[in-house]
Image 1 (spheres, rainbow, N blue to C red):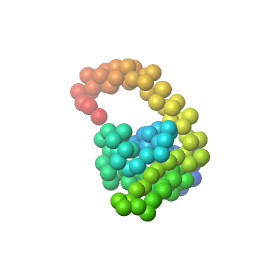
Image 2: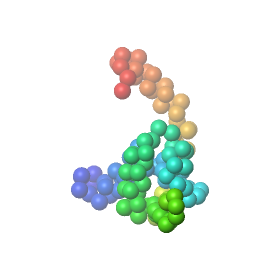
Image 3: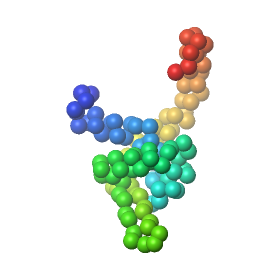
Image 4: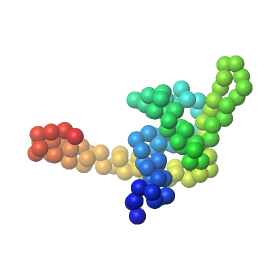
Length: 118
């Protein structure tokens, strides 16, 4: 079921990585340029954002539109397939907000018990 070559695992790896769900959520309401996406997602490097956008584009979740202008302009938007992930992204966000206190308590208990932080 979760073998490395399993097609569903490949998709789970994409949508479950550190940045993809944040990019999908950021593009939920409108089309944005690279810099605007980066500004809304704190801590992502330009290189990582580019890699994430390329992966999402390759998987058909994000569209990239380049305009032949000076200076060049490139915009990113969710495709219909990408929009189909919004329910999942919102559910993950809701879960995180609902359970953050329990997670923080579990982390503090673990750190106190083991004397380490992961």
